[in-house]
Image 1 (cartoon, rainbow, N blue to C red):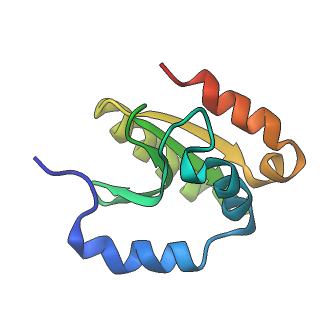
Image 2 (cartoon, helix red, strand yellow):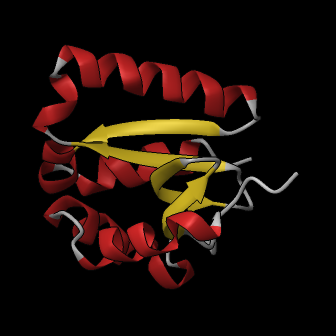
Length: 117
């Protein structure tokens, strides 16, 4: 069963790439072109009907960046359910607050590396 990059989400994925957050741009500079331990990352990749911020196929690792709206109770509960579904499919998921990306990118990168096999 195909679960990656449904054609119906292609336009939305492209729009999200074009209009990414500042935190996504900062992290992407460290992930793109296999800069982090030679791992390939994809930006705004879809799995089922979820679009994740970053995805490393080799590690089955999803990275999500959370802005202020993720602290909203409804959004928080949605994020928890989404995480459970993705983990049941065998993916590892790691979340960072945007603030941490700006203030301590090295810690973010080291935590990502710690999830590698």
